[in-house]
Length: 236
Image (spheres, rainbow, N blue to C red):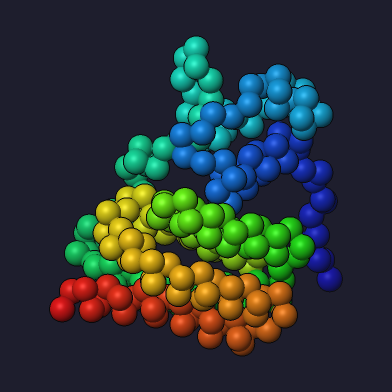
């Protein structure tokens, strides 16, 4: 019997560089509009050649995650410049509402939370804890906390260890937190809502840390249902 076994190919160093920078962007550690270190600085920090850095940067530009400005440097691409978001096009074509979007999120993220409770490592747990702390700090400083909220949910996507889910969630959050930011303002401007969201985030984190997939699923369901019901009431 012939078994279709293929030889294992070592991962290119430039692929590892790309993965690391992409993860920093997806996790929200590198913010939209933020300037990246120079090629030389990145090469020194990662202990690779400048050619390797240059190759990874060019591929990230092609992917639409970063942009290069002549004489100024390399920047994380601002979300408002991402006009080709497939979710935005689908929403417009189907005349879908924010409530419709939240219902789809519920299915995706409850599943992700359950998987995260089974698969999260220490890096994932730390990222979730930091996101909650950042959101609390942003709110106390008078800001809305939407970027930290994005980081929390993207950290769960990473903890689920499913690359397709990460890509789908990135499109969701590009659209939800940046494409229609004004639609969400009313939710985040109410201090009572912010505290409820933070409490819900902590409950999700506790379930993931406790390796309890069923409770993680229910906790995420409670969280997104709260947001969905807020906008349902707002429409009435």
